[in-house]
Image 1 (cartoon, rainbow, N blue to C red):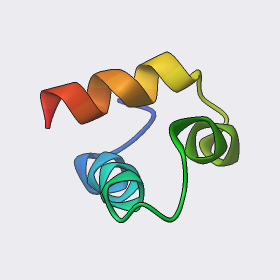
Image 2 (cartoon, rainbow, N blue to C red):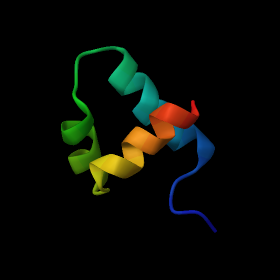
Image 3 (tube, rainbow, N blue to C red):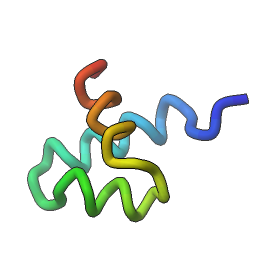
Image 4 (cartoon, one colour):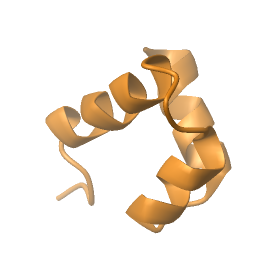
Length: 44
């Protein structure tokens, strides 16, 4: 079972796209490496 559901990943990507938060701060709040979040953003 994946650690994050598709909805959770999309929420993180949308938080980044809204521009209020940076990649590193979102990744820190999710307790993941920022490169993982960057991969989600690229895949989106």
